[in-house]
Length: 450
View 1 (tube, helix red, strand yellow):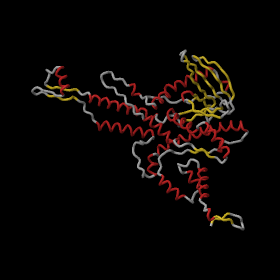
View 2 (cartoon, one colour; view 1 turned 90 degrees about the horizontal axis):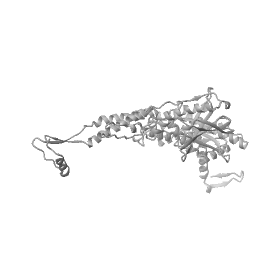
View 3 (cartoon, one colour; view 1 turned 60 degrees about the horizontal axis):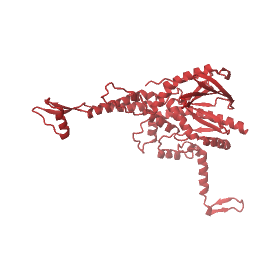
View 4 (cartoon, rainbow, N blue to C red; view 1 turned 45 degrees about the vertical axis):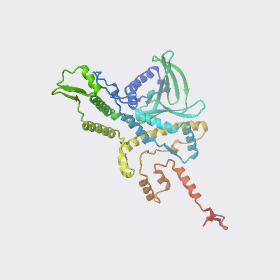
């Protein structure tokens, strides 16, 4: 199945350039991407593969259509590796960090990040809208990738200059639908209604973000999904399984050959089926006509396809057992290509998260007369990949005294909040003081442990 490439739209657009003609043109361009790309990728993730459309001319022949969805496996596995462990945030400005954490908790930020990463893994990009609700709460929500058109300017940085979100409202009684269109610029939101491509301007509202409040989360620089490169291989794998299933069914429906027994009637065959006994004439033979299956060739072909899929997608086959005693270097080697894929994801995702924090901070500062700086927030990703804890702890003990505790903890993949961990260590150390031998120095007034 062929999937068309994504389209990046670049135009220098100002608010006064927005016209019904421009909107309809952008919608037409985007609809081509939706049907020739997004819908196909979505179907492959949902196991709706091309094999399901297979037609065999002879209706009496078996036409099995098994689907083995490597596409689903690749997306779910890579997303789990990438954001299976929540992103952590630290800052020297604890008050600012507390404000941001409360906003994140109110918007279920961990689940939001997973949804964004998951959609980007399938379709190559995902989108998020930052806004204020009716009660002036700062919110952010993941949007349907199929419903967003991003327009970038022609500068070197290709900054967003406009974003369109469109969605359908159905009237099932009248069997009709209306298209609602929201256009976001750096200062305003324009609301339109479209019926049969006839646009009607509804209203205009101002926002105070100072930039387009829809954020793109690209999966990589080419905005490609994680399983796009293996779709054709997955199709061949499904076809191979289908052919084998059909051959096995042919084998099960083998023909009974009665050699030199041409006088056998239908009644004779009925009697044979009932009594499970065949009486042959002189030189008569009875045997089944079957098709020989070369299992070794079939299995080799299927295994080679599976290995190619894992190799091309950079996702290891986790069905193969990983020994608990395997060294850390061996684990790193097995997951090396996976790590490079996730590193590329992280760079793009981190930039988008910074944009989210910047937009939130702008509105918070405006509402509360504060002067927080989004650059004060440090974003840390943690890999959800198997590790050798024994080897890791041994390395940490060797570095103890050479580097700070904070640096050691920062390199522990199971530590999410380094500052909180240091504080907990300090509390535990203070709790270990021997209170029975604690007395006060009469000269200094200091408490001393003997």
